[in-house]
Length: 399
Image (cartoon, rainbow, N blue to C red; front, side, top):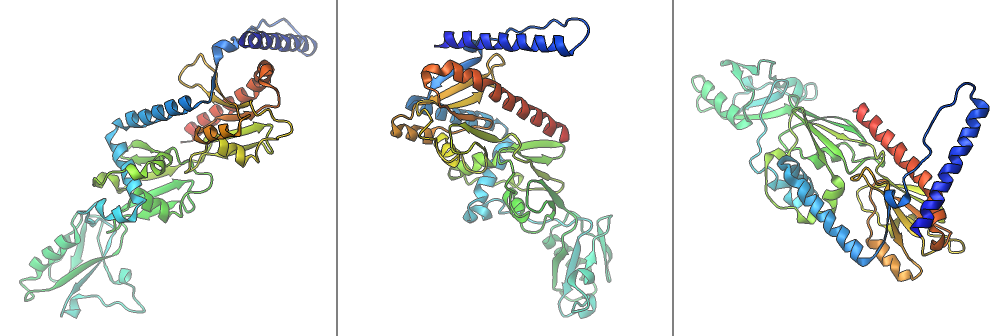
C-alpha cells in the first residue's frame, strides 16, 4: 500500500511541477529557470502506526520519563512544585514558614509609641495611615523624633521595633513600640501577557507565590498558554508548564523553600496560546481548532468537540492523528490511525492524548485508498506546520 502511495505522491508532484512550468512560460518573460520537482518518498517522510493499547501505554511511559528527565534544573523543579502546592490552600503556610518582610526605600511605616501620643502622628478622616506615616528615604533611612535618622532598609519590622526601643531608652522609660507597614512600595513584581489584569503587584508581608500573583491579576485569559509561562529573574528565564503542574499536583511534595516565591524585580510573562492548538477536520460536523489549556485533550474529546463524525459519510476506520516529527529532520510526521468501526475503540481514543499542532482528520475514503487520502492531506498539514513555525519565530522576535 505504501509503494502505491509513493507512486501516487510522485506522480502528483511531477504533474504539479509540469503545470507550474507551463504557467511560468506563459506569464514570465525571459530565460528559463531550472528547478527540482523531485520529492521525498512518503515511506521516508511519514510513519504510520495504529492506535493500540500497547501504543498508549508506551506513550504514557515515554511522557513520564520525559517529565522526569526535564527536572534536572533544580530551580525549575522547585518553582513547579511550589505552584502545584499553591493549588491546595492547606499547604500554603508551608511554602515559607520563616518568611519575614524586609523594609526598603519607598515604604511607608506607621510607628506607634504607646502612652506617648506626641511621638505618634495622628490619623483620621483627614489623614490616612499612608499620609501620616514615616517614609523610608532613598538612602534607606527615616527620621524619628529624639533619635534623628535611623537606618531601616533591609530590616524586618521586629528588628526596627527593637532598634527604635533601644535608641529611645535614654529619653523614655521602657518605651513600648509597634511598627507596621502602611504602604508597600519598595518591592514589586510585574505580571504581563495573557492575564485579565496585567500590571505591577507589590510584595508585602504576605508571601507572594506564583499562583497568588496570577490570581491577583484576575487569572489567565482564554488565550493564555498554560504550557510556557516564563519567570524572568536576575536576567535568567525559567519556563513553567502550568498544564503539567495541574495534571500532577497530587504528586507534589511538602518541601518548603523561599526560592519558590516571587521576589523583587521578578517578571511573570504568560504568552498567548499561539501554536498550542490541535486541529480537527475532515468528516466531522464542524472543523475546529482547540487551544490546549489547563486540561488535557484526548482524541475522543477533540472529535466530540467538533460535533462528532458524520455517520453517513465518514469512514470509521479512517480516524487519523497527524503529528509533526520535530526530533528527526528527515521525517515530516507520524500518522496514528484509530479504527473505530467497533465503537469500543473510542475508549482507546479517550486515552490517546493530543499534543500541540496535532491534526485530527476523519476521512470519507476507505483505508484501502489511503494513498489518495494522504496525498490530498499532506499539503494542508504542511501549510499548518509552516504557518505555526512562522508564528513561533515571530513570537520569539517579539520577546
